[in-house]
Length: 227
Image 1 (cartoon, rainbow, N blue to C red):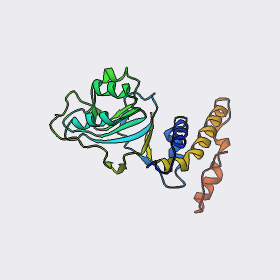
Image 2: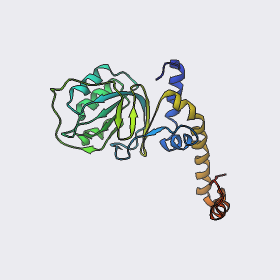
Image 3: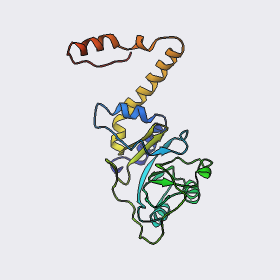
Image 4: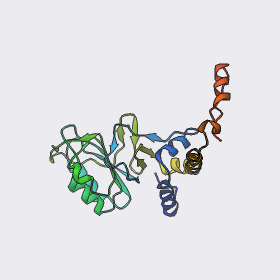
């Protein structure tokens, strides 16, 4: 939930989240309460696009009216997080085009999309388990803004999602606020270390690999560190 944070704080957080990778966020959260990570089987249609936004949860497992209900209430900065249907794709070119028009920043489907060739031309991050040509019906009543369980991960309405080519991280505003400083530090450190490696410095020169391995072989506790 965002109730304890004012809009300016949340807006600044969103800007910072756009500047860090899902991997940096995952690493930053290791020392505290881990951020949630969606299934690696939910993959980006366009991996080069960055996803950051607030979750509107959608249960479209019984039909497409849930998608329309979500689009009706969605505003700029929202991400549709969707439980899909086994009988077909719950989003294609028309839903994606409308989502992009109103400023939705992504669609994440625990299921299938379609019209993939058109989706590749829309500047909207879309994640899905795959594509199917068929679509489910429109007779079931819509179900939106409920806790949505995707495998072992629960996404709450109002949670935030950060996605890129490596996958999608989920957390509340408070959870992201707790790790964003560390994530930015990791992002900066790894970029600098990568440049050192490009310029000829060995990665192993910047690690305590030998000492760490020796300690483990001796049955001692140890941690692999970078410098």
